Amino acid sequence: MERVPRPVVVVSACLEFEKVRYDGQVIPCKIVRELEPYVEYITVCPEVAIGLGIPRDPIRIIKMGNEKRLIQPKTHEDITEKMNSFTTTFIRSLPAVDGFIFKSKSPTIGLRGIKVYAGVERAPVKERGSGFFAEQVMYAYPGYPAEEDDRLRNETIRHSFLVQLFTFADFRRTAAERSLAALHAFHQKNHFLFCAYSPAILSELDDVLSTSAGMAIDAVLAAYFTVLRKLFSLHQTPESRIQAVQQLFARRYAKLLKNEERAFFAGVIDDYRQNKICFLCLLELLNAYALRFDDAFTLTQTLLEPYPKELMPIVDPKRDRDFWKAESLQVEREHEGFE
Image (cartoon, rainbow, N blue to C red; front, side, top):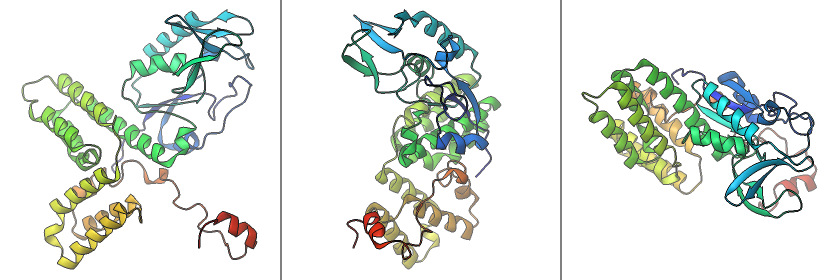
């Protein structure tokens, strides 16, 4: 994989960094630890930043009419203006960033499912939404990769987040060059990755480049980034991945291989379609073809490695366990329903 700049990630300070949670604890977060060698972190705790202590009494979002307020029920203090002022200042002070990792369930920094109450005390939940701080940050950075710590335990969500994060970091570097040639190179190496999201939106990106003659470079970059964010509002599906892989195979290798080899590749595609093998098997096969035919074009395609391989999750965490030495009851429980 071509070396890309370290993504700049805004992260909740309570995740691995500081004991700033409302109860004075720091929260372990595997992905924050694993990403640290590869990203630049900017930490933030909005509640501490506006002067709330550690530990502190809980706060909640209250909706009165059409207006949301941020209240500390025990003291009845309204901290809405303090939070809004800090958030505005924080957003204005940020350098170029590529993504966000926020603490879930927080009334300030949580991204989704945050309880909004009908009153200060003993009131029902009226609706759910984003935290006070997080909502304004997402408004300022629409379409950027943003996730919560607990959701990033899911491998599919984690993979999607990392693909977008490292792609945005690479685009940031490309945009800094302010060169059409650099943008074309970025587009070419991401062609099949983008195809795995949406061939239709890939065509929109093609159109941005094909109509860029005579346009100011800043306008071209802005138009391209708008469509790029639209692309990443979607997610890869098994069929969209198959389509991208088949197109790459047809363009680069189908005419170079024997009938038996083409049939073998089609069989591997079918195995993936039936969920018998993982997508990585297809990518490794394409990588083998690229090495066999000394195909620099395919080897530079980010589809094969959209982020550092070191960040890929372990396929089978129990692989090296000796089940034959384990107690039979324990093995039976771990493999319940497997014959």
